[in-house]
Structures are given as C-alpha cells and as structure tokens.
Amino acid sequence: MIQRPRGTRDFAPKEMESRRELEAAFRSVAERHGFREIATPIFEHAELFTLKSGPNVIEEMYAFEDKGGRQIALRPELTAPAMRFFVNDLTNYPRPLKIYYFGQCFRYERPQSGRYREFFQFGAELIGAPTPESDAEVIGLAAAMIRTCGLTEHQIRVGHIGILRSMLKEAGVPPEQAPFILQKLDKKVYEEARPLMQQAGMSDASIEQVIRVTETTGGIDVLDSFPGEATDYLREVFGILEAYGFTNVKADLGVVRGLDYYTGIVFEIDAPKLGAEKQVCGGGSYSLTELFGGEKVFSTGFAIGFDRVLLALEREGVSAKEHKVEAYVIPVSDAMRHQAHVITASLRNAGISADVDLMRRSIGKNFKYADAIGARFAVIVGEKEMAERSIALRDLSSGEQILVKVEALTEEVKRRREVGVRVRCGGEN
Ligand code: ATP
Ligand code: MG
Image (cartoon, rainbow, N blue to C red; front, side):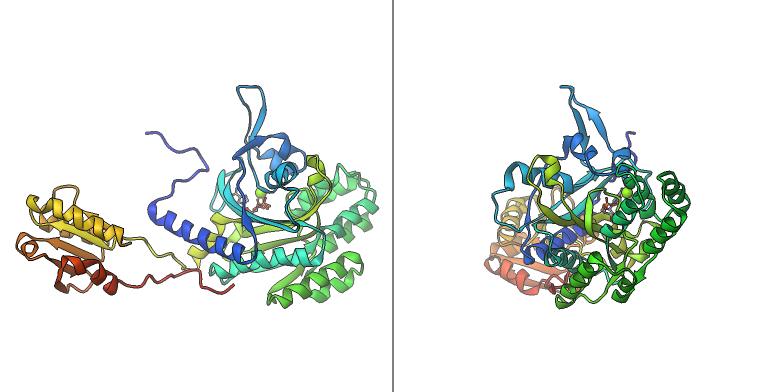
C-alpha cells in the first residue's frame, strides 16, 4: 500500500466541511474589514525566501532544481510571495492596499500535532504606511477573525521588535549576527542565546538588559519601564485597538517572530489549549518591497495557522454542521426508477440536496442506507401513488409519513426541513 508522505494529511468529508466553514468565516470577516483576496503560485524562485525570511525558514525549505536548472522552492510562507506580486503588478492600486490569502505552505519540520510539512495559512497584508492606525487595523482583523470563529480561549500579545533590534545594535552586534540571536530569543532558549550574544561582543550588562526586555509582559503600563519612541508608538496602537473594542490585548516585549523581516510592531495569538504548538497567529510590520526591486513601502501583515485554529476549536468542543443529504429518493420497483430520477432532479433544481438509489437495492436496504447517511427525508416513489401523481414523504427523524402531490413535494420538503443551525461563526464582527 502506498502511504501519503510524512507530515501531510488527507481530509475526509467531515473534516473538509469544518475546514470550509472556518475558511468561509475568515473570508467574510476579512471582507467586512475591506480586505480582498489574492492568490500566488505554490512554488517560487527559492531566492524569494532566502533573501530575508530568516534562518528558520531557510533550514526548513522544500527546495529543488527544476528541469531547466532553476532553484525552486515550495512556498514556506505567503508574505514574501504577496510582496513580490505587489512589486510586480499591484503598485498602481490605491493605498492602503488591503489583501488577504489562503493556501498551503510547506516546511520540512518534525511532524507532530499542530505541526505538519504541508499546512495552511490564512493571512492578510496591509500595504501603505507605517502608522499606528495601519498596525491596529491589521491586529484588529486578526483578533476579529479569531473571535468570530468561536475560539473563546486565546491571548493576543503585541510587542515592538524595534526595541530589541536597537539594543542589539547599540551593544555592537554585527547586523548579520542579529537574526541568529533573535531566533533564540524568539524561542526563549536563553542558554543558547547567551553564548551567541557573548560571541557577538555584548557585555554581560547589556545581555541581561536584553533578556529583561524579552521577559516584559502584562498590561500596557509595563511599557513605562522602557520609555522611548517604540513604546509611545505601541501605546497609540493599543488606544486604537481599544476604540475597535479589543481590550483583551496584552503588551509583550518578548514577541520576536521567527521571520526576519519585521521592523516595527510584532504580535502573536496563542490558544493555550494547544500546549506546545499553541501559537495560532503571528504577524507584524515590515518592509520587503525594496528587496524585491521596488520602492520602499511599509506593510503590516499576519498569518493565521489555519490547521491549529481548527485543532483549538476541536479541543473547545466547537464543531461544524455536517452536510448530509436532505432527501433520499427510493423507487419501489424498477418501473419507478425513471420517475425517481425525475423527482430527484426536481429536488436538486429547487436547491434541496437529494440522492437516489444507484445500487438497485430493495426498499428495506434503501431505508437502511438512508439512515446510515443521515438523510432527513425519504421520498418513496410507488406505483399506486404515482398513478394519482402522489408521493410518500417520510420524515426519518420523527418517522412521520405523509402523502403529497408531486408538484407540492419540493415546497413541502422546504417547509419541513430544519433551518441549518450554524454551530460556529456567529454574525458579529
Ligand atoms: P512556530 O514557532 O510554531 O514554528 P512560526 O513562527 O514558524 O511558528 P509563522 O512562520 O509565523 O510561524 O507562521 C504563522 C503561523 O502558521 C504560526 O503561528 C502557526 O500557527 C502556523 N504554522 C507555522 N508552521 C506550521 C506547521 N509546520 N504546521 C502547522 N502550522 C504551522
Ligand atoms: Mg516554525
């Protein structure tokens, strides 16, 4: 038997229904915030990612040479492709340009729960200017998406990478060494970060000061210990978020982010129920356009780990409604098969999901099958009844059976069917 590659997944119908429902909820929140969808290729020139994505992403990249000798990579993330697209074709759009995307990414990681080699990101980028308003708009979108999908237990933490970057610079760390230190600080592995900082020539005092910053987290007042432009800026962002109704946002100067291109605010959303793989969203402000041959333009964006949000919702017991066939049409004899197909088509054309016996089963076996697939109604096409243009409609949940005229069938099914109860994605935000 051939198995799927390690770190990849197949999705059964029930899972796809959950996934599509979450996707639709995210999409609708993004569009209500004025973001519009884009799509880019699954593979790109590897250089797009090696330029600036940072040591983590490069180590994990699925890269190969194609038949034409080009260095190609499966995309490990979507911000760099989105910005490449912007520089190539979208610079004439009015700004701010607000875009979102949904698609799979590939990273050669050690697979575990919430960590796959093929996974999905739902993300957004706002391309325009480095203002607290832009940053708050993007954080607000991520927060609204997470809230709307029904994930009650989550934490939003916002920091400013400029603080650590300028501390490293002032302590004399060469620019090319900073990403490796930041990578260790991101994961809070101080025992590995310390020697790197020592090798980069930092004094013990400045090393301890850096570590103290990464441990600063709490209400907005924790920013008071680090007065300066960056914390003033953060206070403005928090003020706008409050106006948008988000008061559950924490300050956390330890947010570093694995990707190397962030320059200003950085933020993360965690779902504590997920344990080690708890980060469901990461984002921040950056400028990449000048690297890809364009003018320098500031952007703010984020990527939500779509698969992890689904896992977190599952842990909270939130589930999507399964899409089951509403009406199952059973011909009582071979002579009734043609009529059964006509009736099935009329149900389908009226927007009712309908199925018909395709296996030439007996009536009893057909009822068993209808039950097994969870059909709501059985429509029984009998010879005696059809002679009078009537048909038996049985409600399989109550067992009640009535006789209706063929012409009245679709209306009767519509009247009786349960209005789809959406378990997830309420209307707010
Ligand atoms: P982590 O620290 O968990 O490896 P990251 O910093 O590499 O995350 P980003 O590059 O910011 O993550 O990607 C954004 C989001 O995508 C993450 O917050 C996470 O939810 C999700 N994600 C990242 N890598 C994977 C993966 N291998 N499998 C599933 N989801 C992932
Ligand atoms: Mg990672």
